[in-house]
Image 1 (tube, helix red, strand yellow):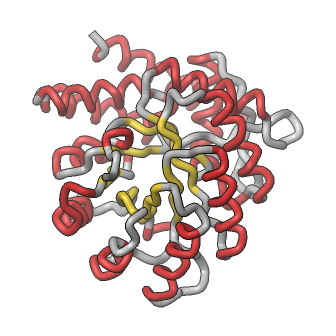
Image 2 (cartoon, rainbow, N blue to C red):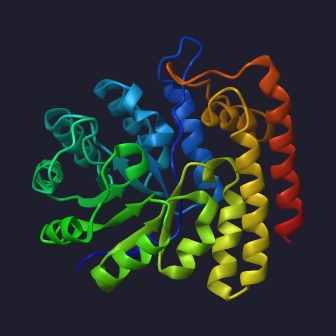
Length: 306
């Protein structure tokens, strides 16, 4: 029997944490993990897009996950994204994740070469077979991966008993409804795009994983609470406030995750470093945007968390 309740809630995507030399900071990883425990989120999604995974080595990603698990101490659902652009490295990360006791592994499809659906299914199933005692979550993000999860591919993947759901980051909300209708109650569909959090939740997503949750988790927790209680007006108002923050963060010259880490330093006293090249670093001119976005988050929390 699948234990799906541990996936139903707010699951921030974990940010890459670097020291001054640009290497993985175990201290930063543990501090960020403890921050999420203190905020009361359901879990964390480690080594995904927000974790800059495609710019990190297998050793980097193992180190991050080891320190997340060390600091979480069983207080968070931990989903480890293990996909690399080849099966061998992905399977190695899957075995490592299972050895640490994560709740689930996840994977995007291979990028660059356009593989047929049967090859994508084989890739995912090979990764899953490397962690035979661990749940598997499909990560659908066609705008970046270049290939979309179709209903036929999803049907093929549901033959794998370890598959428990889909992290759906495609932009059409309809996709969530479609996957929910196909899968039924034995699977969890996660809303991916943060800007449509309430839309995804209302149409059927029972969990949510997002890259901006970590900089303002209280606001996403409050939206989720409002949806559960039926206060959709307040949920919409918070969504608008959250979206305004996201648009502001995306307006910088530097990468959005650099903006997020700078905000966390201001608002939460977390030192997580910058971003890894080739992602663009923040410029001096970006600091006004950082300060403004940090203030917008503080103002929204003051307004809506009563």
